[in-house]
Image (tube, rainbow, N blue to C red):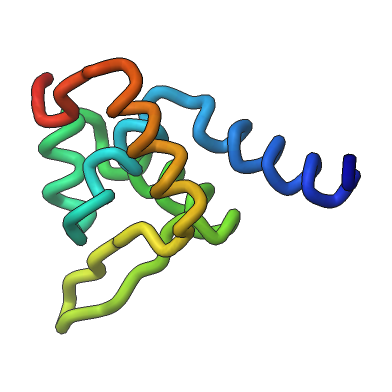
Amino acid sequence: MDKKWLETYAEKFKILGHPVRLQIVIGLLNNECNVSKICEGLNIPQATTSQHLIALKNKGILDCKREGTTVCYYVVDEDVKAIVEKLIETTGIDPTCK
């Protein structure tokens, strides 16, 4: 098996291994969202949310765009989208429930 492929996907699984980061990705699968709304939805402080967003962005899973004073995040990694969508489908969880 290709070592680079293994390393790439191990890193993707590692970054998704944190429950808050996984929840952020699930929430952003079909929608873009700003930091304030993400904080509100997760009920965690903005500093904590920002740290997770930066980690996901640094790994190329998320990207963001500025709209005035607001920064909106969205999922750009198609492999991660597919993996998380398959996880939701396989487990039967409703990602909109809290």
